[in-house]
Length: 207
Length: 207
Image 1 (cartoon, rainbow over the protein chains, first blue to last red):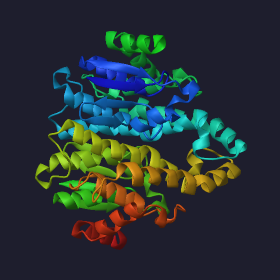
Image 2 (spheres, rainbow over the protein chains, first blue to last red; image 1 turned 90 degrees about the vertical axis):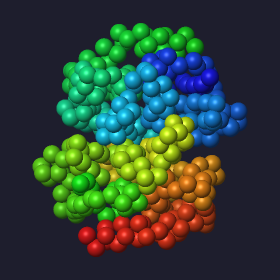
Image 3 (tube, chains in turn green, red; image 1 turned 90 degrees about the horizontal axis):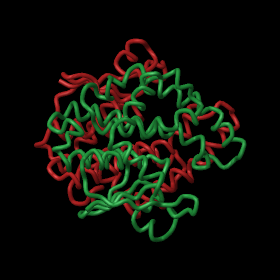
Image 4 (tube, each protein chain N blue to C red; image 1 turned 180 degrees about the vertical axis):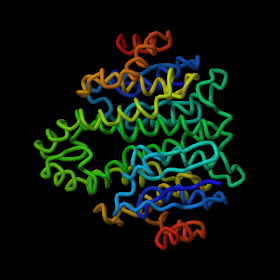
């Protein structure tokens, strides 16, 4: 049994969808950010980073979306969520996911969580102002160079797809015109047609 | 044959060390940031992100340190650079590397590359001011919760080790007192005793 700690509207949705894709038996536990439950001692004992996602497994606790996605793909090989027997193709999937976590998600985080990197309110406002540009530039790269289509890696659906879908939920709020990235938006629409995605999205909104 | 595009004093050192650890046959190509070679069309054709590292392989080009490190470990299994047959243990390595790229390296980047996230010079100065705190907090977490010792994952040296070593090169310049993180500093010292690390460091300084 796996237990996924999540919060709605965060990147934990990527692992949630992947668990559905994998046909995994899992339990969801919601962390309420409005009550700062991520800072409570009980949760810090699970994830001292005070973030989601975290996943409790029979072997121990995992954090960090790219690592959790690869773990899900490797733990449920019959779901074919990554090219597990091809080191180069697997690295391409991982490179995409690494770009999402270290560049695109980070650019996005400057809109709501600028306090991580500056104290001055004017600086935090200045960061917010640049989000459409920095996030937009990341999406341009994905649109033009990285998203092979129809899925991120081409014909095969992989763990890169739920991760892009998850972050692309924030596209409009980040101030990026969807018309600028039609292939990303098309990918997002097609993801929403998948039963696993529908189920995960609905569960988080109900939770 | 593999070709690693690198720049001194950047995170490309991690992959460089891992290639040495693996006993790989590889060629180094230096990108001169002082001449903004990373923005030249020749290099953008290799890596449109205009960053290092990039690695040309017989199958194509890879970027993103965590993905390249896992690729090296998987491509040279006899070097035992990651627990390749244990999805949970592999995910722990990957979670550590993902934290480095998405949190610690990002916090560090606010010292020299704040222009990525704000245009206002005062905001960029405000970001620089917080680097000792944000980078320090990341190291506290590594020191107390993540670095098992003697190597990052415990008794076994893995691809997490050259990555931590690489980023820990910047500890003092980031304004973190080394006395605050004695286990990280001890790890850095022991890494420097390894012939592969010595060779990679020397090659980058000579290059």
